[in-house]
Length: 139
Image (tube, rainbow, N blue to C red; front, side, top):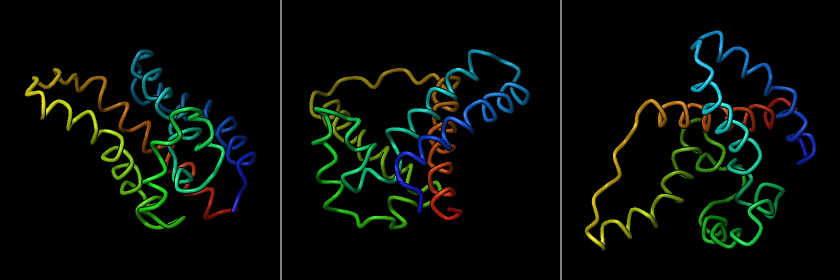
């Protein structure tokens, strides 16, 4: 299994490749930038290693305490943290639960969903998760 520095190097190496492929497939620089921002965020700060005292966990700095219950709920490298698609979905549900609860309690309206932004974010988050999970299996 690669250590944190190796994961970061893999992210730096793969970022231009993923960006180039994304732009070739989509042909839109704005969508590519959104997807790549999510990819880099997921690779460096929102990956399966949030279940341990890791580089991604420590990059949350003062906000890292929000991940303590997550670490208590899941064992390291479980399907819930390192699962393809499932790992990303679990982390999204985890971080969106509090804002969703606040919106529900306040009876506020949900913000309008812009799928042209949401879809590239979701794809970028999952590609970042894949980057992490696959490198764990290869190295």
